[in-house]
Image (cartoon, rainbow over all chains, first blue to last red; front, side, top):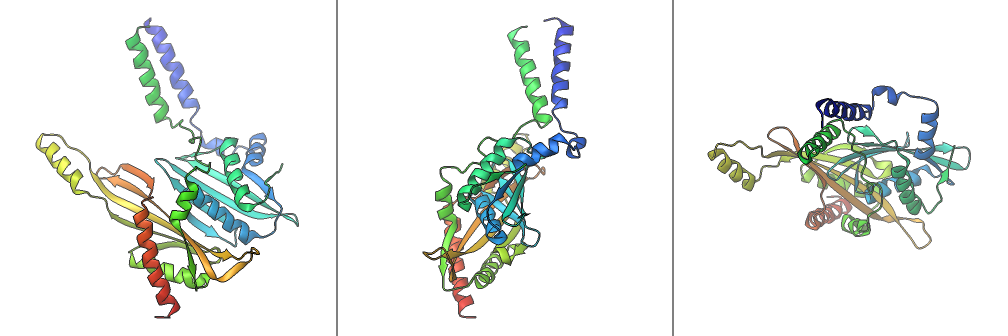
Length: 140
Length: 183
């Protein structure tokens, strides 16, 4: 391999690696990405029992090997951490949606990075659905 | 490109990837594992003859007996979070480090561990699905972070040894007895 070819490929690899490091700008981004984020981070459940829902969120997190960090009934939030060779932090909020539903939203942080792909959240809601004995409705 | 160069580029690339933190969340991180039911049984006990707030007080007492400090609590959701920092020095590691030092090489050994516990209670349900006033289910989950003499994290894990949970529940049943007797 010629020297300049090697240099060029090293440069390409470096640029690719740098590009996938999220900047702080990404956190404040609005528009389509925020909507997309909500579409997989939140679900509606046909219940108005906040306390029971929060307790179910806690037991689901325990089933998933999390240790609870904080819980607040007033605010409707639970934060928890999973340590399994890696660190995964989650905050789950429960708030009313209209008269007959509750909206559950989950945010996850893996190591020091926000989880912004749908699959882990889908997995979480599948686990939560089972524990709630209720269907998790997709919301826009 | 020669094989050796290919390997060098691959290794360099791997290093850069790990430095830039591209690693994404493990696939099964939020999936219920097949042994989650077994783990739940290990970490949960049914406790009769006490209401939820009494059980939380008794539990806080056990955590204090074990030297934990309470970090967070929300009694209305049955949650207590506690932690303690303890030594993680093991004699085996020290002997190893000393032997290596004799050979002229310095090695870091585990120094401290932060142990965290979350303790969660909820009323058990009767056959109609209504909560029972005097029977509770209590589940604890424990994890720890171990750091070495160089300040680097060496272990980051959930604690799953059954003896540890068994010992905790033994101490708890004594504390519940004292709580019920108002001693």
